Length: 226
Image 1 (tube, rainbow, N blue to C red):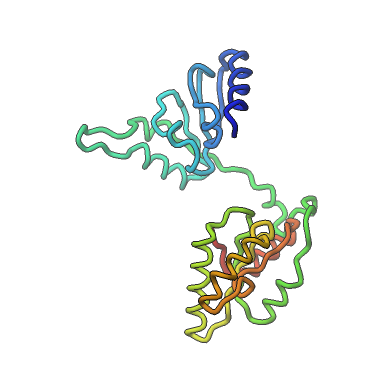
Image 2 (image 1 turned 180 degrees about the vertical axis):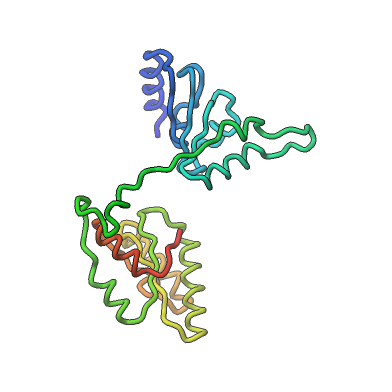
């Protein structure tokens, strides 16, 4: 993330000469803006639309925008077709010609119970079955460091308040233990104490799981929270 690192990258890249095709992902456009300086043709593959928007959204030197799903392709087309009513034009008139999508291969489809080769990580922690036996409703948000904690706490608090009101079982969210460290747990406990809750009432931290355990866990959860 330091400018000298980028300067070194650009210096080495410029010495290679112009390529026939440059392929970027959306985050990659924040490192090198797609340009004819680097390649005769430029393509960007999107797995999301968060990164580098200024580098790809109005860049005439990108020849192909490739989304990782038909849904994301529709969103991209809508963005490029954003209307400028005063000048009677779109943000980019090529919106319907240069956006496509691909279906990404998913290795686990061949092994719906989890690929035994992806064995790194823990087996299903006993605490999950204990909670299920106790009648808890479980959800999952296991990717580390992805939570918006203010929103996540708000969602779990409201769900549990509704459950209490209607006499329903409590709801807990399974999260990565890397996301719920001691400092964050202390801060959440202090915040939740004002409302009669503790961190442990809403969240269950889990270690990284092997794929088979992960698939087992997803099947017993009632919802996922993104």
